[in-house]
View 1 (cartoon, each protein chain N blue to C red):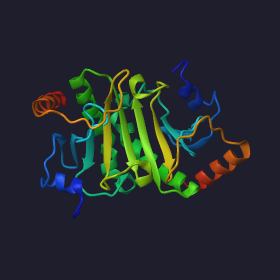
View 2: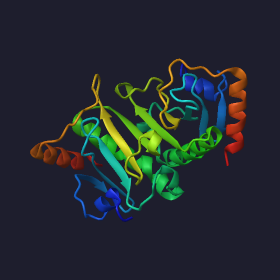
View 3: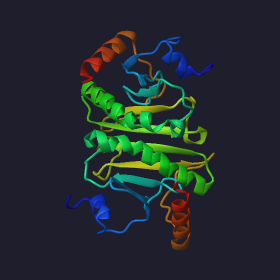
Length: 134
Length: 134
């Protein structure tokens, strides 16, 4: 879809820190992470929000999210994570192309504020996550 | 599983404000709602958390969640909702039987604090939600 940030990322017009890709989904690091390793899992096809995703793609969504979450946890040596989906503006959705947030969590952590990864750190992180994707 | 609150609810040992039931899932109103209409969707079989749910059941989870979310939204005349899954204590999981939170949202709402439904209000709410489940 024209003028959709995530469609541009899916099409390679805008770069991303890619973690995972298959025929239906693309996962990449959030550029403004709420927690270290915060990852977005988007559908390749444009759907405005979760309510529009058809049965077949929706069926795979949590399975892929779990796969990525486990790789993130192994990489960061943590055990816990949140999965969050916001449908609509009042629910906190900002980009209107469906996406699922995967947030690795650790005891006593706090929400990050304006955090940016350093280049080398990000390169190592992405490489480790990909190794840990089973 | 013995001593599991949600297993007791699934087995009918502890009552709940039931919204939906099929062979794999049960949905009911959260007794301490974060937002009006806050609903929990649990698997009937005991799994400690989302990481343990097998492919087949996980494949249905978001489809059922969307179905319920749409019925909640229609009932409450709102359009938006959050879907949240907390895996593990550090991620805010309190009951260790997998559950998905469905939170209807409206513009400018705020998280509820110690809110309890009145009996008649709850009865009407449940009846309307069930009517709106397509």
